[in-house]
Image (cartoon, rainbow, N blue to C red; front, side, top):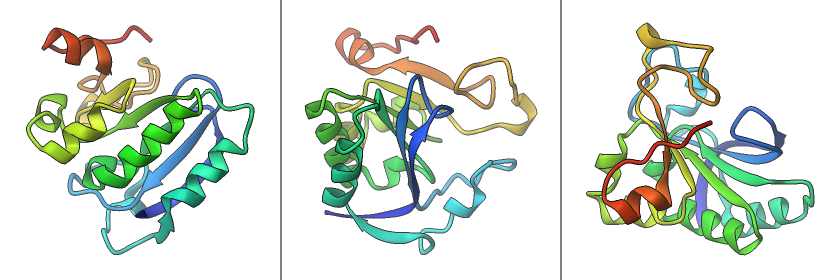
Length: 163
């Protein structure tokens, strides 16, 4: 399946715990002021890639703890991101994702919900420059939540993950 990406990082240590394969999707409607990846905002930027090729790359790295879907906004390409997340789980990896949407918004769209079903942790909410912080691991602003997705889906309400 095709996916539009801005880039891949094979051994990231800043996009979640442990060694991670970070997939930077291309395209983001939020365009948050102060975003550290503004080059990922344009939907016509980046390059086309194939999910099978990306899966082969992360499966070739035995040191990985998980993958991180980031961007851009992976929820703008939920179908190929769900394929990647499912393959990561089949490989014994955990899956984190970052989105400018709120968790509650992702529940309303069937394709977004299908991606959500494949996640372990979701960092949700737009980056807000006025709430910028360096004190919260793996989050850029105080409004962003680290959500335990399986626990949240099971309970029917947001369950935040302690990081």
